[in-house]
Image (cartoon, rainbow, N blue to C red; front, side):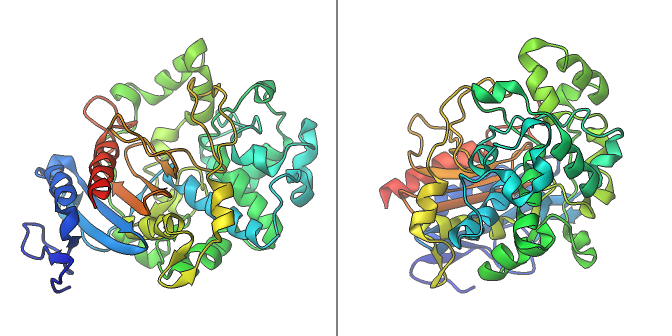
Length: 403
């Protein structure tokens, strides 16, 4: 891409690629901060893309996708809970056309869901983590059974909801994806992955919204490192101990199934459909989806969502304490407010971050969307997360305020 009045080509930076990076001149400080994160091979690699007012202002990448492979323009990565935001957007596209009623019981669309006292749980409650179905630990007999979509959704339909749901939300850290996916599949009468292609990838003109990665594209996936184990401790031991300790019991139940640390590195995950954590995306894809949301639902001159739908998406559904996270996340309909490393937080923004560092969001007040994908899970202290996206977001927000 040639330089113009607003942008500057970064083809000469020391990051080999088959296509050129692009940065709007106003966002050069953000690009500098990003490139500083990937000076050494042990920092892995990543990509950062931003839109402002429906126009792309940043598209950069750096570092390593694997030990001997640079991160390139077409590299994608497993992004964990970042995929919940994409799955939620599918529901909103359907609701906009009257195919889903937020206040209808989930069982209207998925009759088996009514079992075990769940007949009155609504779509709105499900999408704001108030269905009481947070437990993934012990949900199926064997760890690899989590890769069997039909077995998992049948188990969730048969599960008795946690009574704490009546007092507040409980983050459905892994189960949320299956619940939303089956709701969508029942409404449309087609597999969830097909609906994602029709409702998200197709309208946006971007392929990389994958919960089942096409075989020819698997060579593009960045290798994750280091291990996801908390503080490097054996996963089985850590998850078992945490599941018996009061303050951490909910988190272990919701996010630490047996064998999860091994399963995330099993190539079979790219054949499975586990939308709560196994989404594989490019930052370019995520930024464009959130770019449409941030720009009143319009991108490339086409309407992706109505403004009235976006207002519903961004309305906080509960301010109560989350019994899994032990904080007040202020859940909206499938998203959370983005967290940035600044005293001043976005006041009207939605998105979803994932364990390990990836994430994306839309700021409805400024028209900014930002997406970050990476294969370096967390920091030297913990693989569960770090401040990279929070710091990049703070820089981006400050730059937008100056424009």
